[in-house]
Length: 113
Image 1 (cartoon, rainbow, N blue to C red):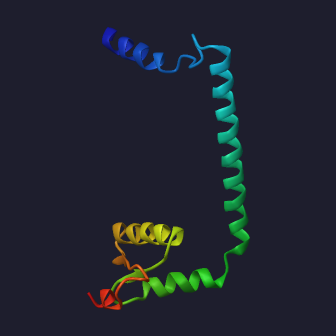
Image 2: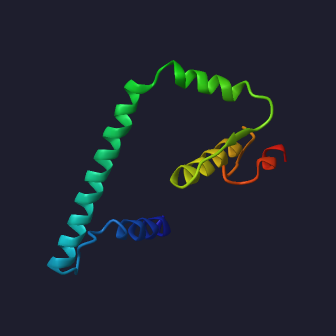
Image 3: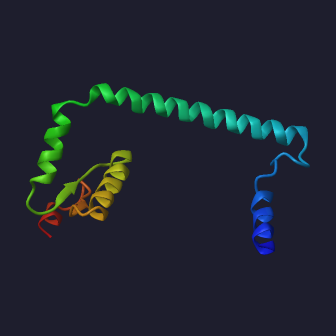
């Protein structure tokens, strides 16, 4: 029982105020960082909420197209869209849908591989 209390005290030590022993400037920086993080999350949450109204039959059609495919899903993009496409291909592959990324400026024969 004593060991359990010791572990509990150690874990509670992590919860002690982060600002203890910090200067006013460091505390202000921390507060500013928290305020910024909260604003960013609120903006992102609003953007996700706005997507709710945009979902329509095209979303279902895309799901049906992917689910009904024979073979792999090929995902493509250049620049930031390419980075996102790579992540989508990776997510699909890791969740059981065979998929891979093809760079559109690459050789067309890559698709037949």
